[in-house]
Amino acid sequence: MTVQEVVTAFGAPANHPRSHAGVATLRYIAPIGSRTVEREGYVGFVVEFQNGRVSGFRKISSNPSFDPVSRPPPSFWFTWRV
Image 1 (cartoon, rainbow, N blue to C red):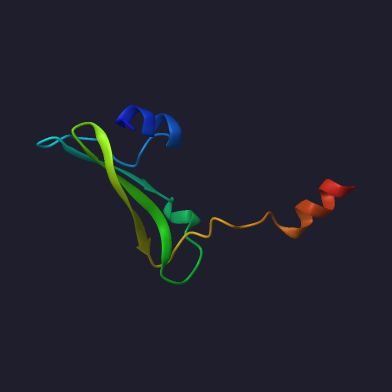
Image 2 (cartoon, rainbow, N blue to C red; image 1 turned 90 degrees about the horizontal axis):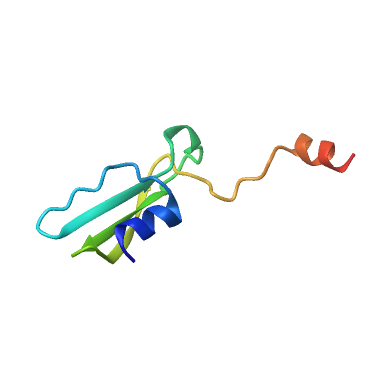
């Protein structure tokens, strides 16, 4: 994948990609307000490029972390069923 294909798939990254010697990175990080889990865990990922193509990726971990499997509040489900 190219840089543009990754941006199309995941949206705008947290940084502006700058290429240095054919190497670039895009960072996708959960907003600080959504990091509600008080333990080390997932907060985002980095996509690495070499010569304009994806060469790898890695997970970013931090504390507090992001809980991507959160559910709407119980009152939402009740209201939706009525």
